[in-house]
Amino acid sequence: MDAMRAKRVPVTAAQLAQQLGVSERTIYRDIQTLAELGAPLQGEAGIGYVLRRGAFLPPLMFGPDELEALVLGARWVRRQGDAGLAQAASNALAKIAAASPRDLRDSMAETSLWVPLGRPADGTQPAERYVQPVREAIRYEQKLTLAYQDEHGSATSRTVWPFALAFFEGKRLLAAWCELRGDYRHFRIDRIADVQRHEQRYPTRRHVLLDTWRKAHEIDPES
Image (tube, rainbow, N blue to C red; front, side, top):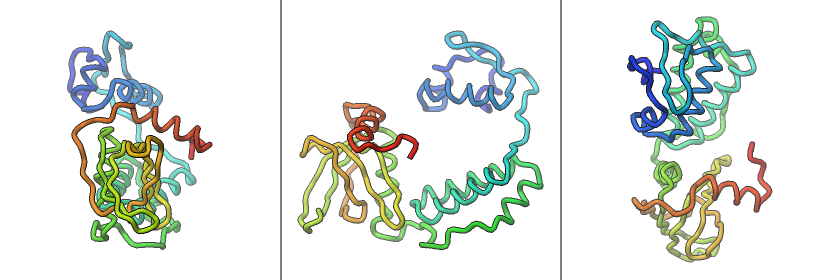
């Protein structure tokens, strides 16, 4: 919205993608979401889009269950995510509260749903410091070289193509294509001794790796 509000002439998805550092597919998806929320957008793919002057989105409205789901999810991330995710969860809740009517803000503050297990992530635990670089490598489709201790206690070095990170209670599991094994492998973050992040992107797109891995392991895409 802010990027389009600053433009006086139609701007293409390619221009927005370059400005925001995301893919054109992400821009088209966000434009569709904004339109569904009631943003007065004009234009079409290939020509460009413009936001009518004076345009604004209506205040965010959530039902009681939706609100509790958001708050509970953010609280879980603050307990189970790395320091970067924990801060992002707090920031997201603050933005939702700022864009919501006062009664919804009060409901967010008064919700009785909690995540008591664990402790807030602060990056001080040995394994925690590797979660954020792993997440970033997944986001940018970059190779990682892991100094890893396998289940038998043997030290090994693996160059992998990371594409998914699972957050279990107290454990983090990296799913990646392993160059040494020529197959999908799973790596526990708490067994990683060191991470080297490569600038080089791996040759297969992340969504392709993710789709084939899900099918191979019969994992529900919605899980």
